[in-house]
Length: 158
Image (cartoon, rainbow, N blue to C red; front, top):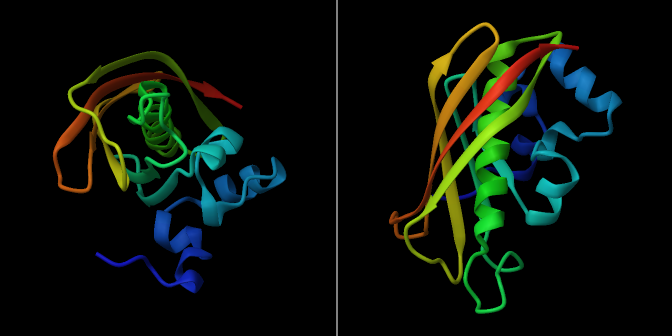
């Protein structure tokens, strides 16, 4: 799979299916929709959202730079990727004028990753009026599952 052309990545409304009202709100906060990645922590971790809707969010994160002292992907980095992906999905489900706040995150680490990119896929398992829950599968470059997570977000009015 190849990366999208840089010019395609700049049109986040098309690539990520995010309503313009939400893009405008996040632009006021200084979040560049072309790299919609969970704020400054997401940027530091190198998280990139490649697909986003209220039902499913896909993102990547490099292993390099996110390793613990033994050279393995840090479990906290995996948790941050999972919370970012699930929160984006919950925010998109909540819709304009609302936001999502993570209230419960569970992560089980199955195997290590030492290089390349990991990919997270957040899939909605419950989308209610005041809460949303996502299952997040994080895999390595070979498609092997590295981490399984579940995130529940509270949905609030702005």
